Image 1 (cartoon, rainbow, N blue to C red):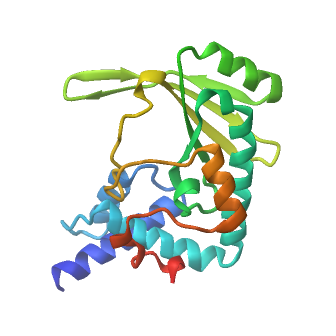
Image 2: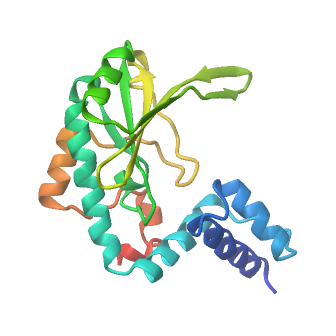
Length: 212
């Protein structure tokens, strides 16, 4: 069996693990898939994302498009509530690659988190706050994550960042591009003109079956 074929099989298995929630992270899914297939081949995150997209299309069909539009509309609504805190839609709902069980991911940029919490607590009962940290090259960053459960049952994950970080660029570990996201105005325009528009690098669009 050729090396490319081995990678594809591992990518398919890893995608299944992610889709059916038998793994949470891409690296974990790839390692489990490689082990279960007794293969040393490790595909890229992008290869796994392609297979994950294919599975989502096969399982969800046309309902997936309706889901993406609904999630974007729900994202717009809560972003308007947070408009004073520089919200941006990121993640799979921004990308247009959302599937069943996808959360809405929003990042905000503020000086203080207290006003944000006041706005959210006034509007939502199901709200949780976490304080995760990340260490990279010896530098530890601490974040505030707010999880909100909408009446529809969907979860919104809000990452709070410092206002001075608003122009920083972070590279996506899956697609390799910079995570730009959508502002309130940009998301509104997308919903008005092209509600299913995808935001992936041009070189990768041909790999995503739902863009055909």
